Length: 336
Ligand code: TRP
Image 1 (cartoon, rainbow, N blue to C red):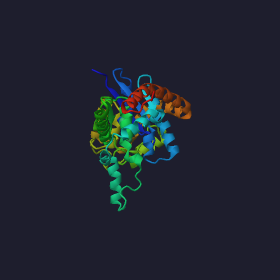
Image 2 (image 1 turned 90 degrees about the horizontal axis):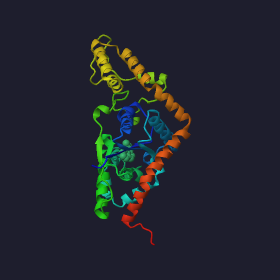
Image 3 (image 1 turned 45 degrees about the horizontal axis):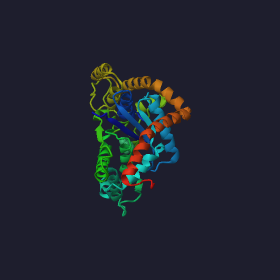
Image 4 (image 1 turned 180 degrees about the vertical axis):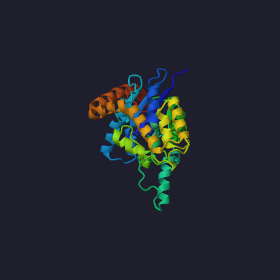
C-alpha cells in the first residue's frame, strides 16, 4: 500500500486561540511526530486575501500562527511546514485547475452562497455585492494546495468538507482530460468533541469575538476565563458537567483522572468562581513553557522566517518537478 499523505492549511487571519489549539494545532503536532505519517502543514496566506484583511494584520497573523506551532513543538524535520505564498507552483497550478473547473461547481460552494445570502437578506439589489473573485474561486486555490502535494487525506473542520470534495471533483475532471496525473484526496473530519465553545457558549471563533487567545498573558487570561458564561446556580448546589463550557475546557486540557476529580467537584456543588480559578490555573500551567518560547519567537521573527524557508525548500523539491510534469501533460511545453 502506498503511504498516506496528510495535508492541511491554516488561513492567516487572527491570533491563535485555545479552540484552534485543541481542535487543530495539538492533533497536528502529535501527527507531526508520528513516523508512519507524512504531513504537510502550511500557512494559507493567499487565502487570507479573500477576506480583505489589512496587510499588517495578515503579516502579523502569519508570524503568530507560525510561532505558535513552533513553540508547541511541531517536528519540522519530519513534517513539512511552509507558507503557501513561498510556493509559486501552487498559484500556477491554480490557473491550470481553473480551466478544469465548472463555473456551476463554484456557484454551489457554501462559502459563496452564504455571502450571496447575506446580500439578499439585507435587501441588496446586487446579490454579488462586495464578493471578489478570490472569494468565489477560493475552492480552486484550495484544490491546488491539496493536489500539488498528492495529498490523500485532508484533515479539516466540517465547514471545509465541501471544498475538499470539490478538489476531488476538479482532479477527476483533469485526469479525465489529461490522463492519470492528479491524486484524488479525501476529507478527514475531526470528531465534534474537538470543538470548544467560547466565552458566550457558542463555538469559539474569531468571528464571534468570544475567543481566548492561546498565549494571552496571565492577567488577561484570568480575566477572560472569569468572563465565561455559566448558569446562576449557587455554591453548594450540584452542577451539571454537560453543557458547561468551563468543564469542557478543563477536560480538553486535563488527564482523564483529573477530569473525574472535577466531575466530583461539580456534583458536590463547587462555586463557579472557584471552578474558574481552577481552570485558569490549569491552563496557565499547561501553556506557560510554550508561552515563553512563543514570546521569544515573536521577538525574533528571523528564526521563524528561516524555519519557513526550510519548509519551502522541501515543499518545492516536490512541487517543481510535479508542476513540470503537469505542464507537459497540458501542452505547455518547450518548442525544441
Ligand atoms: N480554507 C481552510 C480554512 O479556512 C484553510 C485551507 C486553505 C486549507 N487551503 C487548504 C485546508 C488546504 C486544508 C487543505 O480552514
